[in-house]
Length: 455
Image (tube, rainbow, N blue to C red; front, top):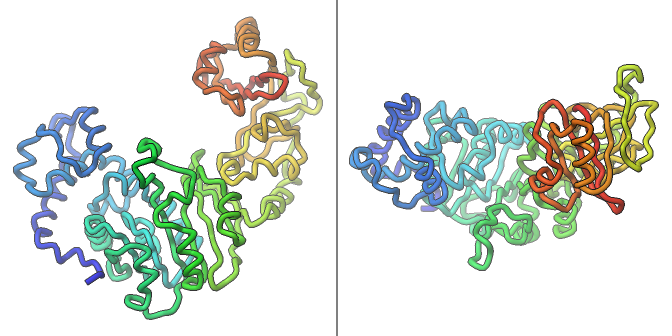
């Protein structure tokens, strides 16, 4: 039997009371809870599933065969609670690498809403967060993962979340699922095929510390082979990639028109979603919203049209409200109208759209498309804008000396295109972090340039 049913586990009755006890211990006070040193936590997180040090013989006796996974989960339950609040409220389970790579609950729900489907095949089930989001929306989900234990935890979660009837979990590989399609699927195609590949190196020749990689050729399963061999099995395919991936390179490699979405939470890019045409051509249109920045990358026209709709609403700050600019550099800069330095949101960088900003918004590029000199303030959710007060240029030693002379060493530094680590750069400048004042610094052929001001 290839369809997974977690209820077949004979020891399930022994596990459920242990899970309840884990949740009780997780909310106890520090004095009542089992104390675990930071080193023990690091060992547990680095080597999930391995035998833990014998520092809690009482629990080992009480929990029996479930001690190692439940102790591991207890060590990570706060992270689980923050990332998957609905799973936590239903007393779900999740730990180790699957929890680390799993989509956050909010993002999974966003994906299910943005890409609605009646039928979906997930070729990389994992912890099942994305399966849950689509299943919870009423979609019929067939999910595959070769890890029998992971399927067990996922199906237990589905049952406790009350959506077990919408999701079928199979203990098989993605390759098996596509090669043996007619054995488990009645229809010739589905609405969406979804892949969240393993982004860790799978060969011993690769650096094990390189936990997230930009080379999609090293992902598991092989996205390119699956897509080109079985493209017509879905209306379209949805692929989750690391934010480190160059989507332009990916489009060249895949050889078809794509749409890419930079999915962000706050200032951080959580994932890149790529939509590939299957039976149907792409007709999904992107936009940008203030809660979660995401941008369609089919062409730059989406970004251009958005900017045109905002351009008439952008207001230039009144000259009298701005501080006078002290220019201690060899850079020519206008002081009327007042000028600013704009740093695009990480979501724009992730899709390479920062390179299009200068031509779209008619602004001056600085630091290899890292900063832009403007006479207006772009919307706050699109990035950060520095109100220029002082400009320095030269070597790091010269700039550091000028900062000291001007009593401006208390600033938070943002470095772009400098060819040196930010910590080393800060050390050479001698600056001290201060969240009220900021410095944007970049390097070009003439040396370093630092803009100091407020955000």
